[in-house]
Image (tube, rainbow, N blue to C red; front, side):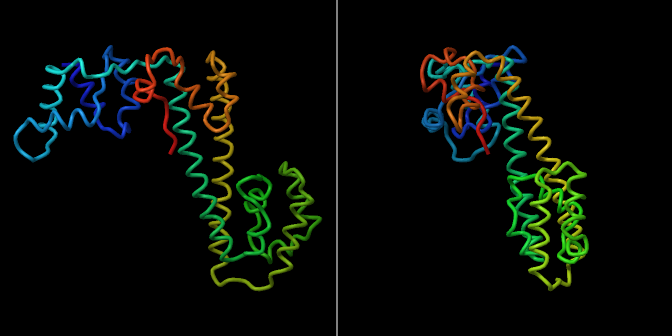
Length: 258
């Protein structure tokens, strides 16, 4: 029945649940197998009743495994490096997605109180403007600091091209004289989000180092990483000779990006 349970957890045609089960089952000496949704749906029609319950599906899965085992496909268990790469790539890309959302929230808040500054920087690509926002978020505050003092403040915190950032910030502050009624609260939230984005950036750098470290143990890494955009995913699959055909590879592939 261990094979039946493996088929049952691997059944959804979307593959969302399938992708992690070879890892889980291999840790418990299980041999997961896969059956396509079309085959299962056709087999299910031979059972009476239209209702759908977990108990009924479990029974049908067990019957499929008992009667039509040859129509199932074994899912090769991935090696340890592939397991770890899968986990870390999924986690990294989830964190990257959350970072993008947080940047958008911060920019929306900043636009409500200081649109000139929001237009002046690319907060997704540069760390310096985030450091600026951690201390100063309003036109009045930046005007009070002035360019020279703001440059020194940024440089003290390790910001590269501190003078250029300070110059842009002061120019934006001078271009906006008005202040929004909710400025104080919005400024506080902008500073909080800027700090959060900085922490995410640091964590993403750590994860990138971990990915490179794991990939260094993968023989195919130098070749597949030369393919921009999806090289890491191919490396996470590991030794593709485990799969006798492209269809088997599609069943037991590596991580799917959010």
